[in-house]
Length: 147
Image 1 (cartoon, rainbow, N blue to C red):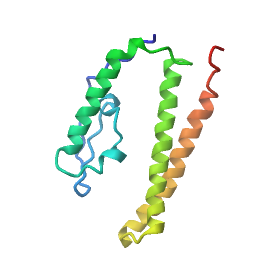
Image 2 (image 1 turned 60 degrees about the vertical axis):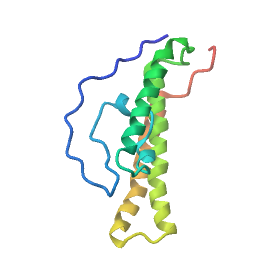
Image 3 (image 1 turned 45 degrees about the vertical axis):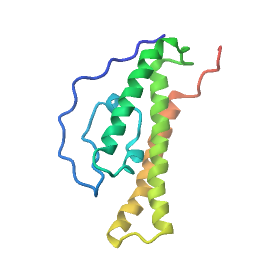
Image 4 (image 1 turned 90 degrees about the vertical axis):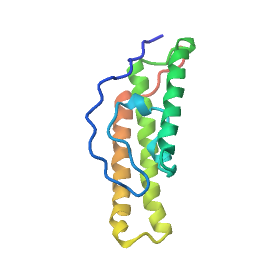
């Protein structure tokens, strides 16, 4: 079983976060600190402290998964390739999320000052998808099981 990288203890210095309505995104962080729930999900939890509580639950789940990790079968490929494929899947999730921001603007009447953001979201969506496809191309196909 491949070794997992230990949690990163040296976090990047926090940057001042800009208020976005009731939702406050977290400052930059080591990815392991919020590996379970995406911020595109957590922004729905607008009650003060709720998103942080769910992030804490995610940390607990992540720690439990790592504690049981030795009981799993090996990946079909190297840990680096498996990690990058997971990143590709998350990029495609982000691509879909950004596209949905644009689609919602087509189906509703956003504020005039938000229209440029909605249009930009479509372009950002395409750029994220291009990055995901670039990584996917470099990785190549998954190896066949048992091969």
